[in-house]
Image (cartoon, rainbow, N blue to C red; front, side, top):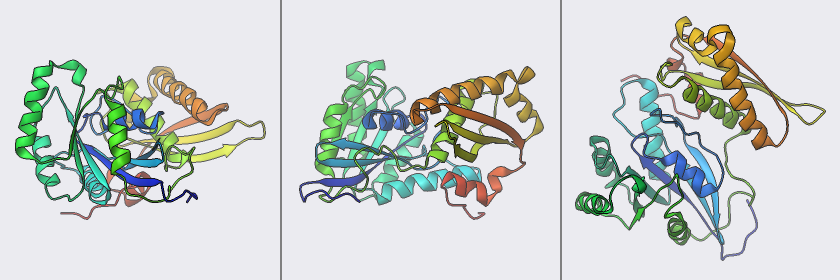
Length: 304
């Protein structure tokens, strides 16, 4: 904990919404650098990712939660439980809505759940650059009919439009108190976890719909070498041999491309050369293994 004066503020903001509403993109934009992975594949974010933003004398800890949807599998239930936990523990909650999609069944269900959360609430209409202005006003009115809120923002998280006003509101909403993290820290996630998430993002971006959602990445070792470079070993876990072959690709082409993309981004983050070694292993039913949940920072849900 840092030693600020009584003029400082610090608090937690939960970003919740349906999958692909833009929560991770907004988190990264507010922090000013990448702390949460982004892909067009739904349910990319699995656990609570905390990004740390500074606005004047206020430290804003952004909790990027998994998308809230109707869960069926055990992993999905753990993700949704994690998202609602983030909302209940925060000092403020922002509901992101994809302005193009409007009030879907998922958004409607989230709004009903939010009615029970006694925290300052903001509605964030994202991707406003993609729809006409009059449609935004109609959507905002429809949301107001269903849920009371303290503030409405219309933004483009990708382009950065509307974020300055949001930062100011968040800074004023956070409670007085000392900062919880050093000024130069951007996330509370260990580097090993962040590295695994970056590789998982490259896996999704490369394979799109070819690889089922049930795959994960773990950082097995992280060693800083004498020359200042970093040696990282990671394992990609899939559930079937056919999936392992997809990840490897013909002649190892796919795994090489994934490794190259992940290595380049990791080198930029750690500001030194990175030696990245990826292994692909079949672990049937890994999504029912409590240890895998601990690695992802999720609680292992009991059977129904």
